[in-house]
Length: 106
Image (tube, rainbow, N blue to C red; front, side):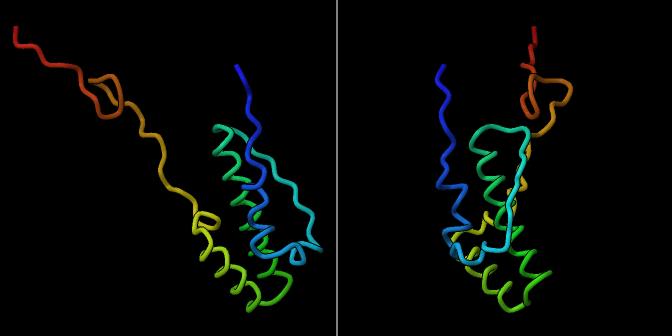
């Protein structure tokens, strides 16, 4: 069993997109739980991007927040918008969420 290191360049994408100068006054601390390595990397990436946007909205000005948000959305919409897909729960009468047990006539 080999454990791979998560792709660090994906985590730092928000910093590289808007530039390190926008991150001068900000300390970033992110904690993730659950999911796999890749989904955790994407969660951290999204948390950093959303945090920057909300920081600029609250402490700087609305125009620079709009510029940063537009830059993120042009690069990759998943930086600000979460993927709503979730695992569907299993139901009765079958092996999974949609699969049914086979019907026998004899």
